[in-house]
Image (cartoon, rainbow, N blue to C red; front, side, top):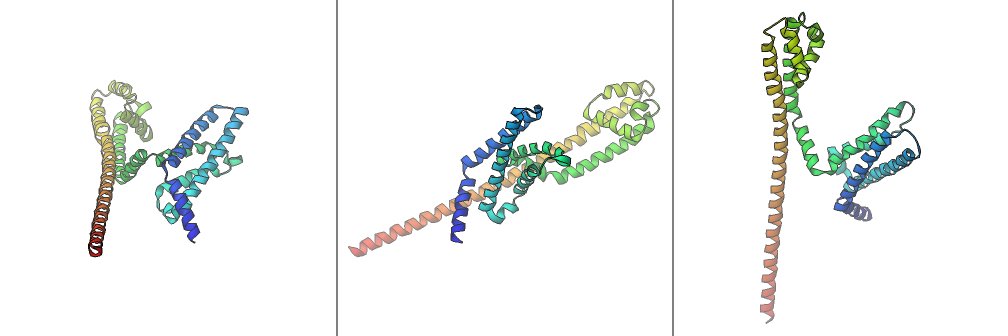
Length: 269
């Protein structure tokens, strides 16, 4: 058992070393570039060589995950990012032949492991995940506004511009284009030929959806990232306080040892 623990500590030191994480990051980026070049080729010896290199890199990822699992033990499975790495590499290990040939395109998902390897990107994604509950509420509000607007626009403009507002589905797609700022002047010009006051609807819709509701998405995401940054600052502060407390205790121990040595010297004299 002691030998296993000693080996685990040695593997953990390697896995957490700066050179190891940098090497894994370089392999991830190189693998993504190779997959991109391979996607451009259509057979030939070069593609076969790249495919062999891809297999070697895949087994490097497998060995890296195995080393992390051995070093961290049960803690490995408590980290959501570890599960993310397992899923991404596991998909790449599925034989991509026959009916599963489409899975070959999913090999590029391994490039997403850069998120786990780069702390700043990891914090950004963590902020997005933290913002999901708020994004759900804003998304529900957007769907509600879009539905109400689609019903109104269909009732008002289906005769004037049936190609844009002929039915509820067509209207919803047209309003989605308006929301993104794409081709809405053409729609408005077509409708205004029959309904001169249609500009009021388009102006109100753009103000409500594009300038208000969509900006709520940005606000929620920023709030989520700020909460993550605040948590990180709290953790850093706690860590600094713990380190300062340890240093204070070490200094006190040193002072006591120095005092004891001084007493022993005095008694000896």
